[in-house]
Length: 360
Image 1 (cartoon, one colour):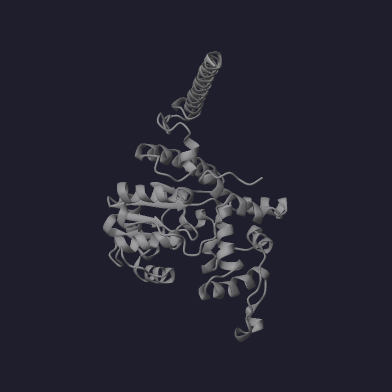
Image 2 (cartoon, rainbow, N blue to C red):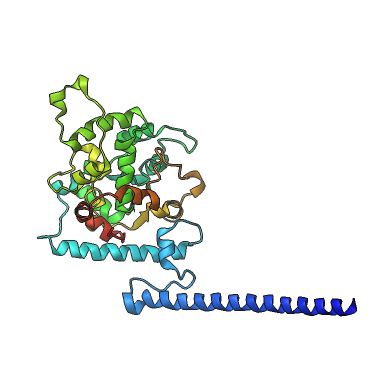
């Protein structure tokens, strides 16, 4: 009996020792890996590699993770580092774009006419370019609250938000050239962007595939016919069917340079470059749909000097989950390479300016 107990004690002591050894080994491996990761990232984004534009992030070594994923773990210092990098990517893309153009655009009356998506909030010296399918309704709601047009407790339908915004929020297009120049120089300019393909999938699912309300159904009638090349005037107003537009037809339409995408509703799939002119306006803050909550919180707290709790982000009005990698893959899986390449070429400036990986 004593011999069995002694044997058991010996085995137990050995097991405890083994567990402690395994724990220490795992700890050392993780620590070594983390140090290696810090050295790797610091070398990739060190001042020697990027000049003075971006400094190495000491507390947030996995920089790319914070740039593309939402969360509160990225503090204000981390946010400022990310902004510097986003601005750097935009600057490089703009230099490449401008080198292929004859001249840099000046602010004249024809240029001002194209600034119909840049909201002006004089009270807070804010210029905000809204992009459909990039938290557009949420930001219109926030701006209306900043202007005192609605209260934080207002529970308005998204169509009401858009209606009030169109009537009360001025755009730069409505100002004289000298007033536009003054605001561009003195105001803080904010822009939110989104990965181009997921934005297009979101627009297709919301507006063309399965309309969820009467507004979307009316939109679908008009733009499905346009995409299919059907003349609605020949059919007659009283006999307009709801055409079923496939995603392939949608992509083919967008990929063709002959389609100018110049109707009002096509703001949902025009390039952000066309809507917001980032190379000309030089935005002070670039937010992402992928980091919407964190970026919005920063703009409200640090730029607008407001309490973020009164300006919360609501769930999407017509939720499409189009940023999901699985859904994106499902939609583009059957698109021929030549079509995808043509689409990517048309939206190339958005991919490059905002540092999104182009599909291959």
